[in-house]
Length: 78
Image (cartoon, helix red, strand yellow):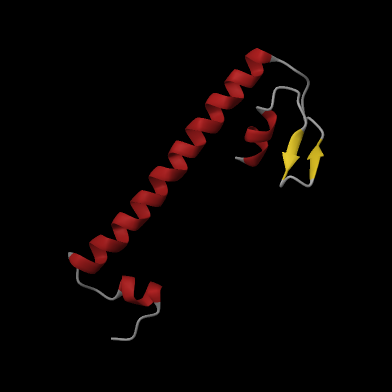
């Protein structure tokens, strides 16, 4: 995700925590930048979906299956 995000910078330097700027990875190419931006957005959406699915699975185990999976993950004693 980082590389695709940095490559979307359209040939401009990339700020690094406000301390310095990293050089552009690629020259300016608007068509490529759009494709990379789409790939970056799709990857982010997939990541958010997987995070939500993981949280839903933990809640399913806790409330439906009533096992100790969530308690073990949270290090709760009971």
